[in-house]
Image (tube, rainbow, N blue to C red):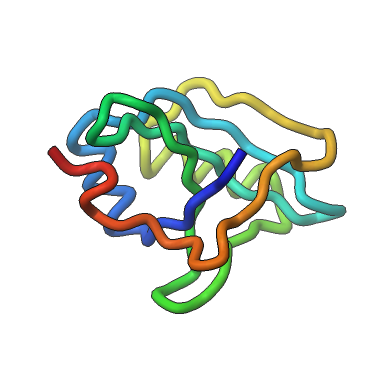
Length: 105
């Protein structure tokens, strides 16, 4: 599985378009958690995204699971999320960037 990185403003657009179909949290390491968002793409398929720190940088991580869960609840209205505790079974592609045409109609 590939996980693409998306900026916060892009994620907000995706939520406004009602394209997020699932939210999960993945444990990457001790005190290192990332959110995962399954998003309907423009072709009707599903792609998985996580947040990037800022343009040109890597994935945004949280040391405290509670703070990440609160952010997902407060900022995105998440009522339920999946929690993956095993080693991640995905890769970040080389460029890792999700283009707007991947999720826009």
